[in-house]
Amino acid sequence: MELSLSLRSSRADDSILFLKKVSFAWPSGVKALDECSFSLPGKGLWMLVGSNGSGKSTLLRLISGMLPPQQGSIHCSVKPALVFQNPDHQLLLPSCGSDLLLSVSRALTLSQRRNQIQTVLEQVGMQGMESRPIHTLSGGQKQRLALAGALASEANLLLLDEPTALLDPDSQKMVLETVHALCNRSDKPLTALWITHRLEELDYCDGAALMEKGRIGPWRSAHLLRNLLRPLAGRQV
Ligand SMILES: Nc1ncnc2c1ncn2[C@@H]1O[C@H](COP(=O)(O)OP(=O)(O)OP(=O)(O)O)[C@@H](O)[C@H]1O
Ligand SMILES: [Mg+2]
View 1 (tube, helix red, strand yellow):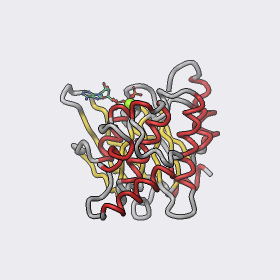
View 2 (tube, helix red, strand yellow):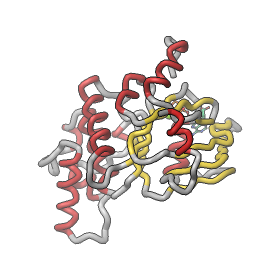
View 3 (cartoon, protein in one colour):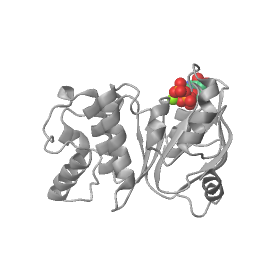
View 4 (cartoon, rainbow, N blue to C red):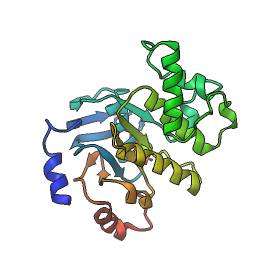
């Protein structure tokens, strides 16, 4: 499996996301990405692990277009949407429906927008919650609403920066299963790049890679990556 993942990931033309020697340094001089090259081998749920400061969040900001690369190139053939660790950092309006309205295309009619909002709420298991005030949602529901916002914007590449880090085990599982289902549905499956420090989450992915010092290693099976990281047990990755 690892061999086929590596071979497929070396082709730029059949990948929805391809980075070539991307470098980025913060104004402080810290080099967060250092000639980082990688591609997503295909649709599905791909996970990145790496120690604190290895450049994972900076990478997602570059892929989403929030930051420009200073060197190298990023090719992304689909629409990306970033989901933060803390949903409070991206939910802006008082109710689920009003917040989602911000993400829905303005080219749609009012009734099409309403339908779109209902559809994305159903896709994250929150059907009928259009008028629920956001402050009454649990942490897991807020995170699924943030996911619904990404779906409402018609993004087909989800960039998830430790989306379960603040959640309890039940909510963690629900968010993970929601994203896994979206990436495996028969009609228009999504692609997700998911950053985690929780190695048990790797069981849900189609491939995982290690980020170290601003660079990403080859895609491996979750099992192989967990075995490689076992000697580091006790250190956070
Ligand atoms: N806004 C910023 N301004 C200056 N330096 C930053 C900024 N954001 C990140 N950095 C630095 O860039 C490097 C990479 O940080 P980044 O947040 O991308 O790492 P990370 O892998 O996401 O870490 P963590 O696992 O802790 O979230 C670190 O040295 C960090 O201090
Ligand atoms: Mg980070």
